[in-house]
Image (tube, rainbow, N blue to C red; front, side):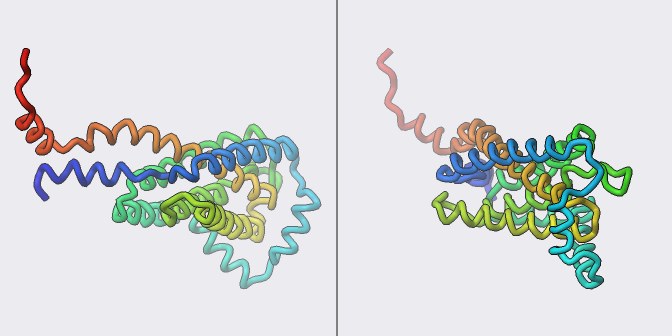
Length: 242
């Protein structure tokens, strides 16, 4: 690759938005709903140490202590542990870079960091406990899975049509459901904790994606200038009369 080609490669990687223009308004609404809903659930269960009736019902519906389900749930749970997050994150970042979706590569890393920090900060504020000593709301595992899934959903879409929004939300909901199911079956969290993690990621990651687009938009304009073309244009420009 020659030196003049490098700015074009950088520009191509930075120019493609994380969020297609047609999805910006809908995902802003989704993020607003996620922030409000996760806060509302947290306030409802603040300071509690017992499951809600809905938690008991959802645990029974999820399969409870069935051995085969426990094995599957433990594998899903591993993917939310640091080693699993590094593995999945590395794969997703590599795919984003190889497909010239550099903004989504950045969102993968920033999204995981944001949901991890926010969920850790929220737990002592909400003060919900499980097993008598562990802070439970919101579920960081579920939030992390949801954050990954949002990036995958955005990676799959291009134009921002209504069908694309359904793809993004469908992929995200499926991942959140599986991760939340695993945490519930393992009784690592109550079902409402998993719901809170899902809503937390919905509130954070779309807004973070829009911020990544805004920041990259400030960078990509000077990068997209082709030095060779700029030199040719200056040479071809007629001399000034002044």
